[in-house]
Image 1 (cartoon, rainbow, N blue to C red):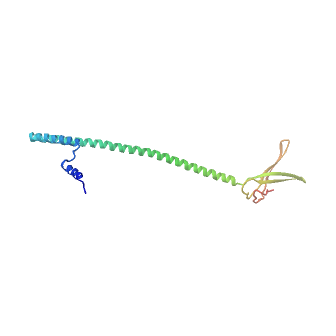
Image 2 (image 1 turned 90 degrees about the horizontal axis):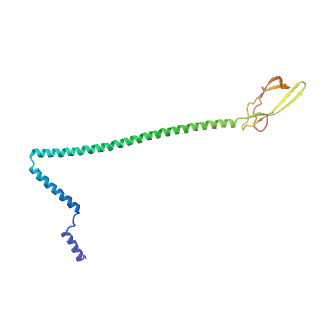
Image 3 (image 1 turned 120 degrees about the vertical axis):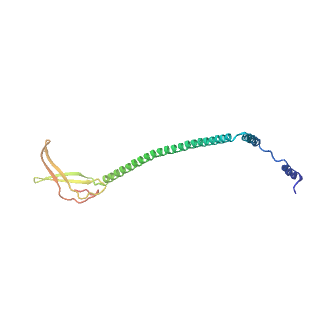
Length: 194
């Protein structure tokens, strides 16, 4: 059941509507006053004056419209210029990225070449003469050389070449090349070839 006070409050709202905001009342009053003044002027104007007034209004509207067009054109041009500038900067960034990628690819190629060269050098058989023995018998000199492989892989198709010199008091008396036509075969690091 609704109390009498609530019912009375609701009926009071119907009789006295809430007041409008003051600013709305001021603007409505000014607009009405302007409209009355305009209507009074229009009654006193001749046809020619009315046409001139309307022409002036349309000229003002076209002027405002042109001003807005100029403003928005300027804003559009600024946006386009900014985008072009960003595109140019991103193009320069792209060029720098391409150069960096090319430098990186060249460094990778150099690293691959170095790795291949290192692998060749590490896997090569390094065979050196380790010891020499010389024996004389019946006017013959017998030279025995011991070779050692210090590389990581065995040597294949090994041959020996050298030069034998006979010297006396720093003067070379005789030189003869030693060319072994014998194929010593292959040998690894462990057993030395003699």
